[in-house]
Structure formats: C-alpha cells, structure tokens
Length: 87
Image (cartoon, rainbow, N blue to C red; front, side, top):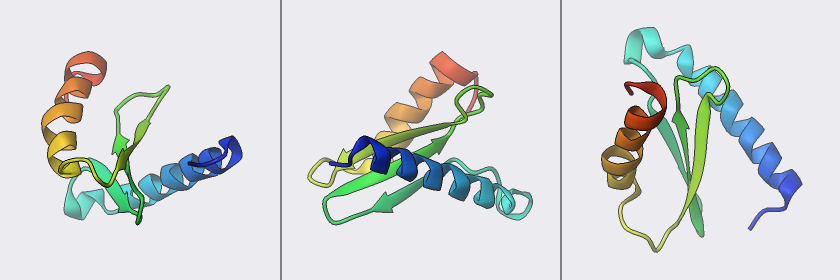
C-alpha cells in the first residue's frame, strides 16, 4: 500500500520507537514486539537479537486471524529456531 519511500520512512520510524522502548526494559522487561493497528492493516515490529538486522517488520491484513497469536506461536518460535537461538 505504501510507496518505497513511505515504506522506508515507516521502517525508520519503527526502528526509532523500538530504541526508545528499550530504555524502559530495566523496569518492564525485554521488548518483544510492538503492534500498530490501522484501519486497513496492522504492522508488527519484532525485536531480533541480530547485529545486522535488529528488527523484523511485518504487516497483516486486518481481516486475517489474531495477530498476537500468530506472532507468539508462529513467528517468534521460527525466529528463535532459525535466527537468534532464543527470543
């Protein structure tokens, strides 16, 4: 739905917000993900412990099933197994 330039700005925005959230980790625990719900789509930004690619951004059509369950039970275990060892 977004142009390449808009998508890049969205990625930068999400990366900056994740960095800001990390400041609260000592009191709240490790950041796992953030979900932004728009009328048409939802964006999930997932923190990945990787120096090269520290976050994974994905979008969901709001007609799809529960995003939280999909992230917790499908995406995070997949990342844990293939990319980072543990989430």
